[in-house]
Image (tube, helix red, strand yellow):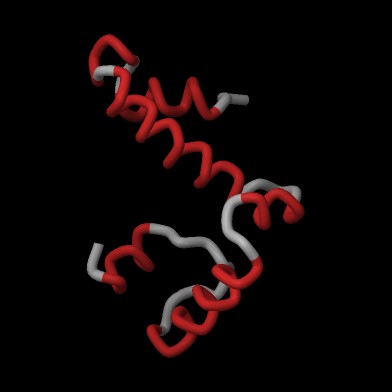
Amino acid sequence: MLTPSNKTNAAFGDVEKLGEQAWVSRYVETRRDWLATHANELLHKTVYGLLTEAQVRQFLQPAGLKRDGFIGPATRSALGF
């Protein structure tokens, strides 16, 4: 199993390649994705608070996006990010 650190290195490159600030930013993104999609659903709430999760779910349904409480690429795109 790859750790978030190893996943970051594999997907984006290591600290020497990216620079410390860029690598940490990518690591945080990777770790959030890992927590949000972890098999243990209790970890999902460590990424986004209950209110944020509820608001995301409210946004997803009318937009026709999967209602899983996860802010993924399709959701970011729908939000204009």
